[in-house]
Image (cartoon, rainbow, N blue to C red; front, top):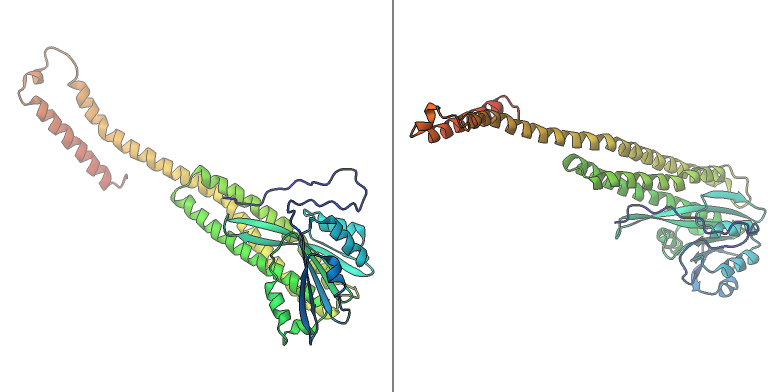
Length: 355
């Protein structure tokens, strides 16, 4: 069972010139491009594997959401950069999948990156997906590692004619995407609470070495989740105080609300991390209690057998002149005495609640 997404090594070669486009991921599938073109009166979705087909269908009179699933085609990224006059350093960050969330303001667009987190029910793991966005005049370009995201509800809202999103510009779409990603963080937090609760139950009932390994794995998972979420709070804060011409001021309240949600998620992660640290004490305490119970049981058994061993030792001596040796009923009498002594001691200790 995969308990956490692993640390990844940076695959970019050392010494390359700044802005050199190097894809650092493992997914090598052909990218899928989707253009969602919408306004208050229009909505159209176009899918293609060719950027040229998408480019000619962009309508500057509407909002154009260009979504790219898959980043393995470096040539495609270069075409997009050339078409929208995107700085080569920003394109470099798009392909660096380990890049932390950030926002940068350029003259013709706003560039930001963040992480989408998903919980894989099959192997019980958390998957982090790199997401980059370019917000410009009448367009939003979103680039992600692979097919599948948390934006299906946004697409449904855009397809609904009465939706508020249809009346807004591309900056509102950016807000919806960030808000959806943050809302999905709560699902990750809930799954972690479930896992931690199950782990606590295991520690109380039957602590094993596997339980100890899970504590360390969950700690690593929380550390990585926090590593990807915490910087996003600074990104949203900068969007709230933005002077960019591409982000209207009315969105300040919206981004402020997202910032509150991020802080809430981080607070939950801190609680979970402290809980896991306390589990080490719980593990040691439970193991110690079980060991004490074992020692207590062994002590009771040893205490019962001490007088029986003494009697057996006395009558096991080979002295010639022992009067009891000639008794016809000596052996059964000694056995009965030993049984009475053992049973009496057992009930006496039980009455004293020694076990």
